[in-house]
Image (tube, rainbow, N blue to C red; front, side):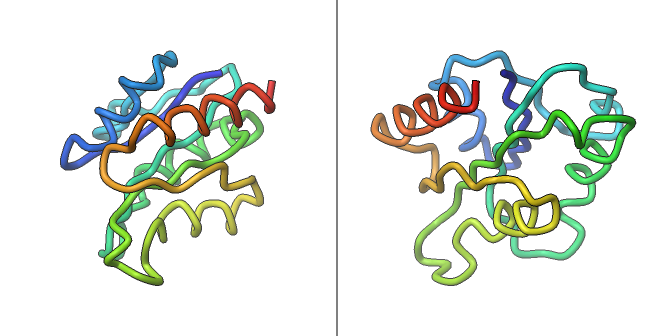
Length: 122
């Protein structure tokens, strides 16, 4: 299983590094390719429209949607209802499970939860 993620501030990068999974960072259209293995998305919360455009381009490239198994969200709990909203939007639109939401770069407990949930996915 691979982790595909976006990160504007570097917080998500730090979380993915702690996971120790093979990963692919989406920065621009140049990072979009047809993936041929199962993956999870790890998405920070962004509060402006169009922030998920790159993620959706990736999902909708060739058969990439069929390999998407789940989503993990990050953010700041001070956002209240908007906490992990980007991840929640993708989960709803593509009908995949939300594995976990964590704050900032996540803590040891968050890493363990995500690793365990990914292991359950196979």
